[in-house]
Length: 245
Ligand code: APR
Image (cartoon, rainbow, N blue to C red; front, top):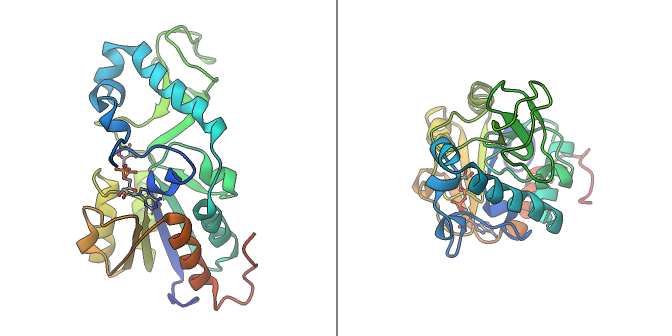
């Protein structure tokens, strides 16, 4: 058991709130993405089938926006934790941005996919996404056009790597949820799964999430302050831990 939390295996779940201070829009805050565009139109297979160019424009715009944002102290603190924590460490994110990777995180489980990747609806092949996708984008594998889509998990689709996620969740002894409203399953159900496995649970969020009552402890404030303080506390008793970068 290590660190002031006495944890030997930490499982972290992040949501849009960890990227908010980097300038990436969240979904359900006041003025958030879903107050400006209907998720049925841009985040469902039906919406893509109905108007693929509208969906491409939505994700092309968000992909282009990645060039204008940088990781914040919360992303960097989690990269430090992965580097210096001697126990098992899992980072699962609902986010499709690349800020965890750009902060130095090595093993990021993107359960909702990634803006920087694309997927062929015809043959299933995946590749790094070009700057802009369209209905004329040809698949590098099957050569066909019309099927290429962002490699993003839409509502009604199965998130990625769920078996691995649940295996790593039940092996943890500390579950920390950061920057998520707890509004979307299956991620919103992870805290209940952790509790039923006797795992200690902590929420770090700007405001109480929908599942805040399920957490052993909840700290509310800005991720850029809460997350570095949490990481500092975990690593406080770890002699080999480096200093924050
Ligand atoms: N620091 C910490 N928390 C913050 C900050 C901040 N600076 N800013 C906002 N938050 C919190 C909000 O209080 C809110 O609870 O982050 C949460 C963001 O919630 P959502 O916008 O609902 O985003 P998220 O929970 O990641 O959404 C889950 O829904 O639309 C789908 O696929 C999409 O992955 C997304 C999923």
